[in-house]
Image 1 (tube, one colour):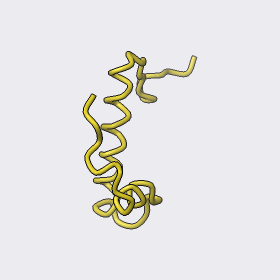
Image 2 (cartoon, helix red, strand yellow; image 1 turned 90 degrees about the vertical axis):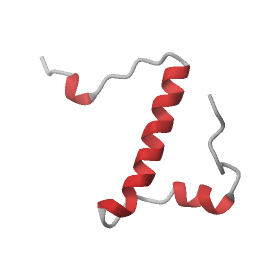
Image 3 (cartoon, rainbow, N blue to C red; image 1 turned 180 degrees about the vertical axis):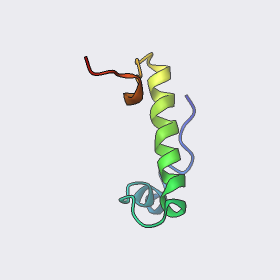
Length: 58
């Protein structure tokens, strides 16, 4: 897996960990960053990912 660009940049790292708030357009890029990173790591380590919408209560 490739290294995350600018991971060592303190300003960008701090911004990545901010709370999601405000308009969707304000936080969506950060959400997509984390979603894509989590999925990439999970795929690399062969983790099973199940969408909550795919789980049925029985």
